[in-house]
Image 1 (cartoon, rainbow, N blue to C red):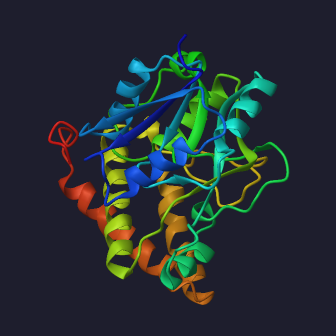
Image 2: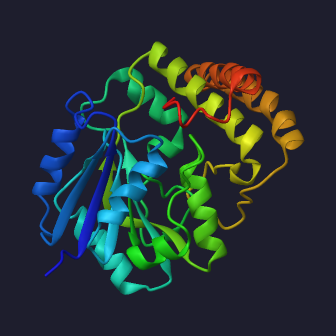
Length: 280
């Protein structure tokens, strides 16, 4: 009999400084045992790696985990399956992403400034823009029906897939009690590198795939969230975000925003459409 769940882990090297073995150990500890693991190594971009895993998947449900994530306890898979079993309108069931217990003081400080990286626990199944590829589950048929992941973008898989699922009439939710650990940048250099890369990826999407450019939300409740705004609106909003971060003393957010802007400008000047083929 095929397994009920196919877990997909996209990874550059299959190790990620020891995070991948830790993730697999947390999967091995799950009370829900009817699953397989497809570790996809060395495939870029992430969307292509996930699609390769989905092509191999035998399960009714697909669970995607970032290669540096770790399931927080032994009930995560069971809770994700229960949510999907209980409501056929759910197209994406996400775990709450929080910083790991061993996080440094710098990482905990960053977590307080970026709510998407340290989500508050939800009391019930909650429609939210916070569901993400850190740890999430889909019915395989739904995932295939909406076209799987995009392979032509290097950033923004989460918002793009959330929008396509909602447009197809499915819910995107967070599941109570399902929690995954995901580390934040460990120091200032890592913050600069992460946000510069994200800014470059955003510029790449804006230049070559504008239909994939969406906003992300900063509140768990997505009732009034609008995922798409024009470039002029986003440019006008950016200095306001910088000012707010500076006034409220969120130094990590402020530096991250500045690095993102530098990455965006660099991408706008230098990004080429063959960046994915070149493996960047």
